[in-house]
Length: 524
Image (cartoon, rainbow, N blue to C red; front, side, top):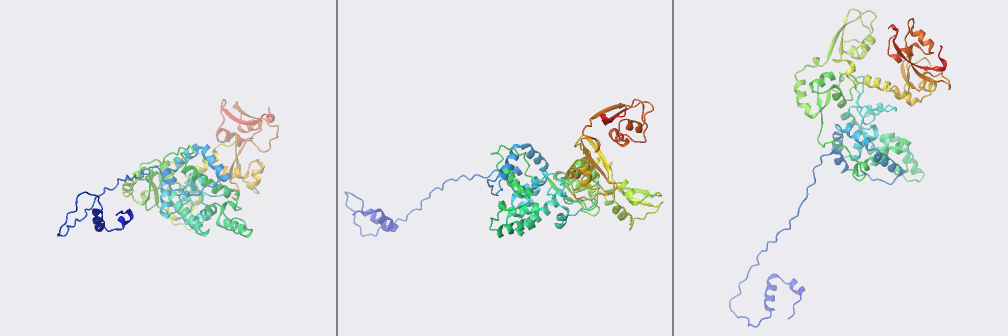
């Protein structure tokens, strides 16, 4: 009998065993027996499992790598995306500098984004917005790492006063920015490109552009919308940046590593504190502490809060031990000032680098009236104000004095002046004038306000034939500032400014003065 394989497979184990026994070809007769055959139970055969080598992913040690693994946005072949990609590729030093500035804060931002389940691409927005500079200030009046305007900052819970600007407080501003992004994402019905565009230009413009395209039967994806030029560049720049970060090796970009371990911690201190004193307790420089706490405008934290400091994690334990041993009134320096005849609360506040509201609060004064002979308690900086280099006043002063042209003109605002008029008379742009003076193009000017104007000529009334030269003049016997100014057709104020001297100081024969003069108008 011929047995086929299918029939074998269809048998039970026992029946197939008998069947196969009867089918084996042999020359010996099969023995006969009256005893029932002994059933042999099949033995379970142990088959060794194949060894599978499971490779564990290498631990992430670099925040850039952590970000790159989570980037998911599509990268279209679009001219603006391609333009910004090439711009980043051709300027690797830009990303290298950003990596240094991002060192203390980037991991904090990434962890906050991951905790909310938001796209990791949002961690790159501060690069587009401010080049990761928490002290950045745009001339549209936006400030901080996330570039909040004042109204939007207040709407999302950030506080601002003379002492403190929450837009530059990185942990606080990050929370506000992510709250805003989630709001915009919901408002734009779950479209992240819409939401990011709305972060730049406002939800109203984006929704209006979508409705317009629908009405005209046009596509409504981001790339088809009619939006302000800045916004049309904003989203492609972020996408290009994300692509460069994700494929840094492919594009030949060497990103400066950011350690994937938290570098900062927020410490509640409970009361106002002088930044110099806090830096001493933390064993840090004043600048080092202030760079981690850029939200503080002055030499101390705000009396009304927030009462917190961002510190390096390795400094926290020792700082907490030290701060616990100090009382709140020991954390500031106090001056007992005797009010003099003619004093005003405003003048005193300005003299001691504080403000009127603080003096009123500390001294229980309801108005502006102060009485000569009485005393005021004034909080004063523990160090020379110039040692707090990153305060608002010192940063503004540095910005005003940063050379932009050959000559710096100190201008005092007169009645009827406007930024437009001043800019036109001095042949500069309104945006330049605003930038030089830490204001916005829409800022209202105050009578007698001092402005800085940078120009390539000394004055605005010089003719096209003017020949400007730097002159080193040796003071002669009988010379005066007025006589020298008249001789060279300049002003006494120019002489004082160019030579950093005071009008009350006498000139000495042989003294050298520096002048910038139009040699065609010298009165020899």
